[in-house]
Image 1 (cartoon, helix red, strand yellow):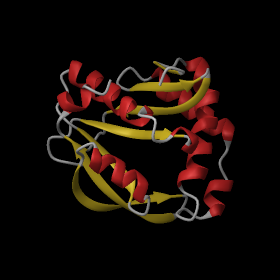
Image 2 (spheres, helix red, strand yellow):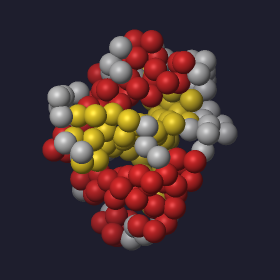
Image 3 (cartoon, helix red, strand yellow):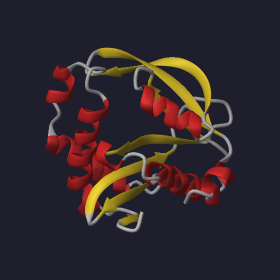
Image 4 (cartoon, one colour):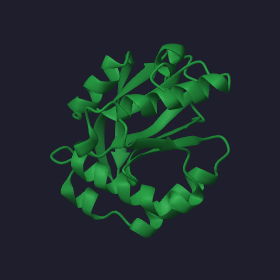
Length: 177
């Protein structure tokens, strides 16, 4: 990972992260999410959302860059209603362009989020993953995420099966940071 850097993004990165987010959706969800949903993304809205996320003091994001190019990110925060008992934090998003998979970047991003949450006094991080996204499910399970329950995610009027997981060993995950 010599050409990989990790940093906390600023509001100035919102546009780049929004574009990265959408590119990762299109890669990860091809054949899972209807194309009509993926094609109706409004980049101005997505950028504005990321500006809000990056200004939120209760949340934290980490950005991975490969040779200066945004490659992936993780966004962590708190839900109003926890998805799993004991989960006091939540991973809202973890995405990495496919060409950078299997290089330890995703694992490092999870480690950074876990270490940050643990340092803030957090105990566990929940996350939701589309159940049909088997590579992501396998990744989370390999890192020790525990399946909690099935759920559904409503995306532009489409209900998609989702699985809720929880990371309970934040100290163990922190070793990847």
